[in-house]
Image (cartoon, rainbow, N blue to C red; front, top):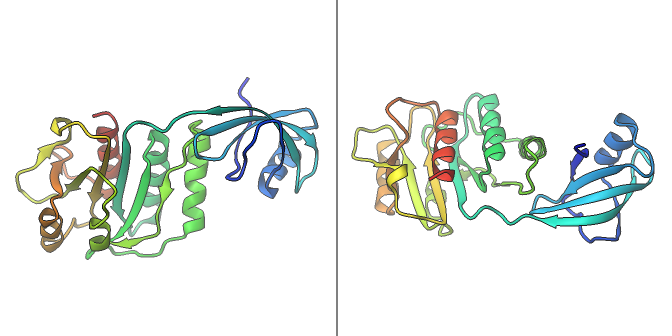
Length: 233
């Protein structure tokens, strides 16, 4: 039987007591009607999973005993996606959900020349990531950055392989034919694509242009295709 699974970013320490957040307490005690002695599962989103037994029933501050701990290392490939914010917020939220489900490590919302919509509700977006992590039974929560200017994002030094997906008719590489890598950052543009100047700036900084197939994809679809190809390459 699968235990109810919750996110508690500060949980740690086997054989210790831990007070659940108000949201988790309410869900356990009021919604699921769990009692003292019931088992649940917790993760801190950093690779740790805990089996925990409820010892104090309270709708706002239930307490559990952490009985066992498991650590699952992060995937060998660290994949980050820089992706433009979208005019249709629901499409961007769909991307966040699906990218989390397949195991992306980092998501960087981009503000590009042709980005039409810049509103970003960080709390809502983070909630979507947490829900997707729990639904897919994962233990690593992707890092979600605050929106950042495209040119600033290009200067990030963290990744071994830096890729650019754009729609111009230039020579591009197939992701499946790239040299072996342990971490990669790929940039996905807005509706209307990156501007020619933005493309040239990335190429000047040694970003590798890549193709995502023969058809022109929506931004959120391009993000998902890129994520899938990189994770499985």
